[in-house]
Figure 1 (cartoon, rainbow, N blue to C red):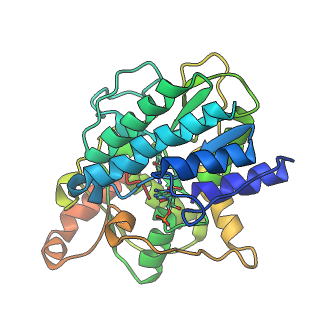
Figure 2 (cartoon, rainbow, N blue to C red):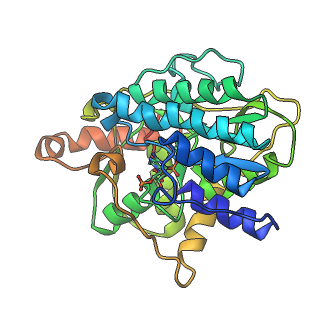
Length: 321
Ligand SMILES: NC(=O)c1ccc[n+]([C@@H]2O[C@H](COP(=O)([O-])OP(=O)(O)OC[C@H]3O[C@@H](n4cnc5c(N)ncnc54)[C@H](OP(=O)(O)O)[C@@H]3O)[C@@H](O)[C@H]2O)c1
């Protein structure tokens, strides 16, 4: 999802781009990684490859780690040998969410799930082998080249709803088109180290859903629920908003603008969403379709939903897809 937008933006800004899919390069194979990077002699490597199935990582932490940590190390090592800068994309899930305020780059990490642990290990593996590395933490990505929360909302909303969305988890939805532009700007700098790069602002996933329906003109009922109603295997941070403490950070537009730009792009001919193959759990969103028991509690949920719509500090839930 992110990788394709990075390719588009880098291409359109005059970079000579070598775009590699999983089939073109498996980053868990160090020889393959080294041969490829030394052959291409890039100025910068942007590593968008990852195991992003957050719930599956609970039972497959080792496999997730091979890609997110060890593979990241191989990419960084090969980039260093080629004299190239390297970008590792990390996540707000390296934090536990207990701070209650936005996290800056210097805040202590403490992942609460396996995926977060593997991503933190990837940060360290990258930074360990090269000083010419950018560790970019971002959050709640959505973009045209992958199944994502916006598409899930539109599908459920158009299906008549009601749609039930968590409101006790807060974060920052980030449009991959905007993030890609930030990453391509970043590689032209020497500001190595950790960067927080999410869209401006924050919201609960419930508020995000409301904004999607408002902007797209889809009329449906949206009901608020809480994280403990979800059957997710992985714990997620309750409040993982990222902000930058850097003097001159690269900033992205606000998240509502991300929704607008995403919706505008999907209306363009040939730009209909192209969900691609993926494990089911990887694409599961923190959204429930109404179940019988919930129907019984509908009045209560609707009251909560109204409260959430009023913007009274609802929190949000995140997923890496
Ligand atoms: N999505 C989010 O909400 C979110 C939030 C914060 C940070 N991030 C981070 O942002 C980055 C991009 O995420 P995304 O949402 O664009 O992910 P994505 O759509 O799931 O794409 C990940 C890509 O990595 C590939 N891949 C997996 N294992 C690989 C391997 N061993 N070698 C080479 N390629 C491999 C996948 O290919 P296959 O599909 O063929 O396996 C897929 O093309 C990741 O580092 C992710 O951790 C994502």
